[in-house]
Length: 301
Length: 126
Image (cartoon, rainbow over all chains, first blue to last red; front, top):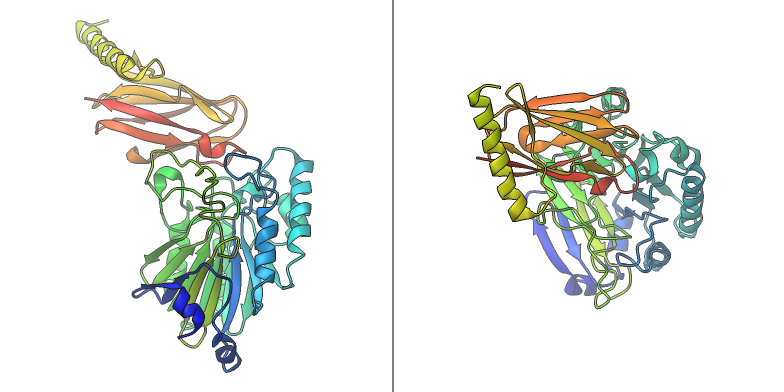
């Protein structure tokens, strides 16, 4: 077992086709590079809910610095990922069209400092709901799209530009057509989206209005994993054989679903700065259709 | 007004008064109209007025929902209710509360920076 494996606390999720590693270090397993060279295996980094433009000293007094620290942390990984994904809420929402665009420009400038130059974006409701994705499209392109990497078919779904949190019939038809044309029953599929596709906490509006239709569309395929954001914490759930994994935020943490009467931001704790914030590595073992998720804090432990 | 209706109203007022004493002055009791409990709720960024109201179990309720600024939503999962609230229209939602307790309702149409705080509480009394 590598040094990393000795340091990290392995949480096995039986039957989920995934292993989640909680680590206080940004050093990766020494054996991974060799394994990666021998197969299609690869890894990528997921960052989420950066909320650039948020201002709340009691929630995150380092709101101007947290994203930059995360970029530095990703750049400091010994082995660089094949690509980076941002699963929405890149910016904090605003009614002001100019401020919205200023925030997107600033966000884009900051993440342009990533050493990895393949970066995939998708919107959150803070980016796209008030103008149905107009500004987001100007800066980051399509709101839903697909790409392929080493035998894995990635599908980016937009469940936020409709302010009612729906994917919508038109996008559902696009998804069905993509699956029909691009995908076999055993193709490895990773869906990237912002909101949970299942009803995680209806009282807190942690759901996608037509998420069940998306899941029904994906259900015939054997190897489907969904990575998302929105809920500002790590969470793992199965709908049938489809695994859903949410990521931490890079701005503030939220309580566990239904654990408190109100879905309130968790205040900053000076004794444990950045607690609950972080990013993750996702290592794809393509042949096995298996994903290892490794959670990292903002700063090195 | 029939004696039955008068008695009904009196019971509601008395029950609501009890809640006022227990929970402060933010509770808002329904108005009785044609054997229905009617509540008019105004939505604006980022609050409902009233944000807390009380109705009686088993008596039909009509919510009259209006928006004073932009498109908002109203979702009450415990009773499987939702509605869109748009400026210039009154959206009526009818239901019969069949369970007592406190139930959260919230805006499910993203309306801006503060949307997550746009919520309220329905109290159903026996």
